[in-house]
Length: 431
Image 1 (cartoon, rainbow, N blue to C red):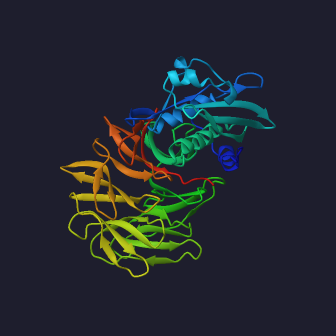
Image 2: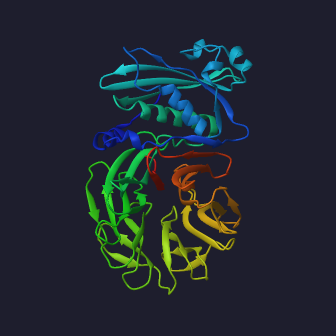
Image 3: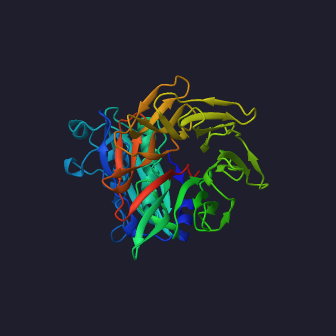
């Protein structure tokens, strides 16, 4: 079976955004699953001239390793380097305990490359599939990530998210003055590039569901204001300029609305902006602080943080009726709610005994699980497959990004080579 995967949208992004090599994040694996599946990604055959700018099979191995569910076989341990499934010696790979072997062939095409790759089940002694991925001249990493997605899903049954991206905030100092940048990178931190630079703070980036826009808060006007920006064209629009708070923008699942926090009427409340009509609708009315809204996947309700119970806890607002229900009760502080794509798990910043960590809660049972062990963890953002989440934390006095699986079995960090990084937002799929 063959399948061709389009990478046109990623190509458009690459054309309009300048790469900043010095800003690249570095992946450091902290912990993995106890019983990862051994998989060998054999070095791919290259039928063109010269040497490829990227080692595609190595990128695939790194993607699979970062999942924590797969343990790539080191090249030095490989007994052979088959180029096709027919060249795979089942006996040799069984001796290494390898469960799957990936073979592949790279060849040049007009203005780009074609990768044909195969997944072979060693213990089943059969080829599971042959697929193809194409990409432009500067898309070798995109080709690798999409191939890794296919391999990961075939082995685990979980859709891969290696081909997604993230937006985050980077703070550096220039001439002794702080400088802030909204950055875009692959989800492994590679190919970091600047979307826009600011002399004043920028925060709370949020992706549109089609992956073409981000909304964020900028202080460039002297007070917080909410902007939306098209990643392909660079066009942007200022959406709010009210006195007081203008914060926490988040797109609705259909992309037609933006939930946010405004204090234009005196108290921080949740509002919804219709992006087609420009109409603001006030959703909460309470003397306490209501903030940090996020949509449930069906778009029918919002989760948000409020101290209406005395301390910050997470509540759910049903839009049709205005009914508000408290969701969290464990711990003296729960905030920054995010909901898994299936709507079953609530992710939050949780404080217990003075320590801020990332935790999950089963929305039906209320069962809480702490995922991280570091201090001052914040800004969780969930992968579109619901398997991992990215968050901001501290290493020493430096802000870094980190990731953890929703079962807490997989952990890795992404320290920056330059400056402090924070407020990650994991992209949707680019289908």
